[in-house]
Length: 540
View 1 (cartoon, rainbow, N blue to C red):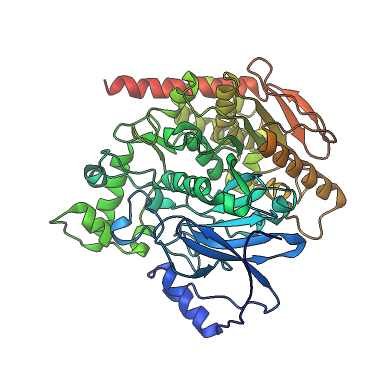
View 2 (tube, one colour):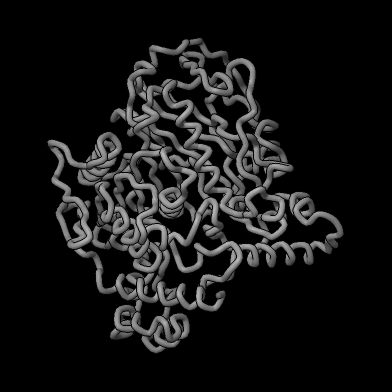
């Protein structure tokens, strides 16, 4: 229990199904304040109160003396004139705000109760007082920077709280709302930049943690950021941006998702994709043309006049943007020269990431088909990839495509950040997760580790799986506490170094390996560098 905060009896509150259905219909158009009514609360539940920088909040006690605070605003609603602006401070409120309901999810495809007003976070804690100084873990969800939400049940923070962590999960703007760059938006910016709004949301959330987490029993000087997939890409960005310096002390990146097309320059092509402003300009022009909109005034104003539904229906590809401000230079350059935020790092991948994306009935049927498509994709700069990723027989095509996807999207950037940190004074640790809950005979696909990390396995899970979940969450908690996953009672995990690139295998069997798919990743690195170098030469 939180002995340092005021306890109050909860009043019974109700709402009808008709009201809820009406809110779902209106959710896209209206800000969260319009439809965020109190959910029914059991009169026996004890709520707790914490004083924040912008008002008071009350949470809900769960089993095990864990208290959860849901839907706390960490920024002002990014609507109206604040669409495509850096996040602004929360709007102060009077009285006690009931933090018993998750905030709306950020705009994404075909989801109810979503809103542009979505910058909310949640806190789980088991602290006894505000001087407990518990380690803090801040979770950033995945979903391709186009979907997902902190309210997803897989990310329930109770198990982490029960192990002595203050767990914070955050929402952030996605799709065009979070990553749109456009010359008109850059022109109105004091920095002359646009895009990266979702990354700025992460920074704002971490600033909120710095200023408020003590009230939940957390230590603002012991913050671990962690995320998976696109959340791992956000960790990649937070390691790269100087705006996050000092806001976290450790980082965990699960399946870091950095592809040829989701990192670009604000104005110039990087070889794989056009510059971010050009991409945004095309998307906006196509939407205006579709709507028959003739822009005669301020383009940025016309863009903000678009409905949320119009923006969601645009053809737009998300990208992290090298803009000289949020991301000062190409991330690869930042990491290679060691100018990233230097903190202990734990990072890894699942053994069969590509199984999530590549399906036998939706990939190439023959080696001939694969060869034709891949050689065209790679061009002359990527010819060396053929030795590693073209199958020897038709029967091997599926497996080779799974490996290519795993390496291209996840294993390569995972090694990039681990190598960068291994060249500093900070400890780094790599893992490969191998357990497949659905089919133990197969490798672990993308996102498979999540229910183990959060200890939110289904009730039908075997004791073997529960033991794996306890192990991996114990590693994560120990790392968040000390910057090293090792402690008495856990299998030894060797540190990662640039010479051996040792990693821990986590699954039914726990052991060590080294230089994971080294030759394949070396070939990919050469392909990326050659492509980037050619693009840089063409812009000089």
